[in-house]
Image 1: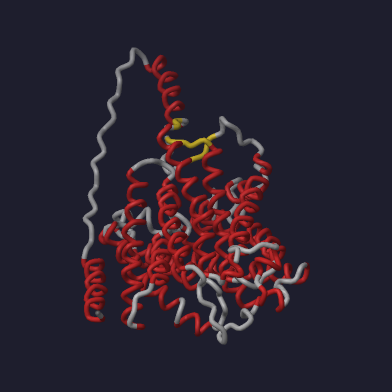
Image 2 (image 1 turned 90 degrees about the vertical axis):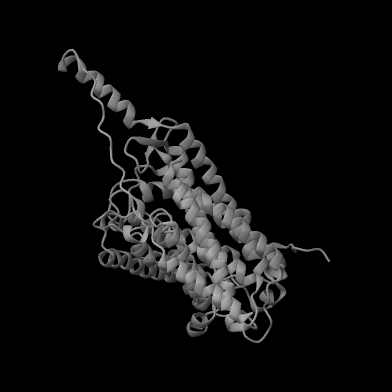
Length: 464
């Protein structure tokens, strides 16, 4: 069995590294110029036609983006909630479901109040403006840009899509301090971290005038904004709350790997909206992100279970589900700019590296990151962000321009990673500290032993 899995792992690695797609340049056809009786008569008509093209909104794009938004909501509730819920002990099942659902809902509302304005309003290098606070100026007629200058989206669609990103990012952090944090403190921390960390990073990477966007950092769907951001905040939280009662001495096995598998499957399905939706149009760009999300995730599943079989002698269901999430995380920043063979390599590497992240690295760090938010999202996000700078190269099948330089792009990617790690760590520390001073971070020991379902919410997940 070990030999077979070794051959499988080596074969996948050789296939990924040895294959590269040939970039083809499409020749642009010259536009036909209609004859006009006079330049004076033709100019107004041409100006009117150009104006109409600039403001074009396509029904297919609108339908796709609304569908993608629904898919991202599906990722969070029920996908992430069930994935996390199955991993905790049964006495804390409802508390995790509650935290994911309520944090997601809270952030979506704050997004409408001021989040959208600060992330995508104005043209500051670090943060936007409050010009669109309470969605001022956003109406049924207002439009948002896409990656094509002549194509627009209804602004309501764009802001709803981005709201789901903010919501799920904050909900991801819940897994790091699961089973021991006060519900009220979770909500206060989420508000502070969203305001002072998520919004600036989102603006720097995606917003008009954003510092990292201007530097040329590549993050198609949120490797820095979502995964590194949440992973680092989660690690800080794990340190500040301390280890769970009985950690390392008592068994803390997942109470339902069946639900974890269901949640992981929902995450994979929803992630197509997350990644392909980030193209903002129903075009071949969305198809590329779609197929990369498929291939990278499958490769990561195989790599993770191969690594488990080689190191432990058995491949586990938890490992396969974790591998899927690791592949999804790693391909997120790269999905719109690498080729399919590059995505397989990224996914395969993510499976092996994140397996180390939740085992060897976790022991080195000594933190009780309950559901391995940093080991999967933090490590996978860092890996994916850096590999984006390599596999975007046209010689490796990516969509980079002919003069794409791997070395310089890697430096830009590394800068984005470092800024995100530092910013998230500092803001998370301050936010957790404030929540601790105001409300207290951790539940009393007797409540933790009894379980947060009863002590925090007065309910149980399962009737006896």
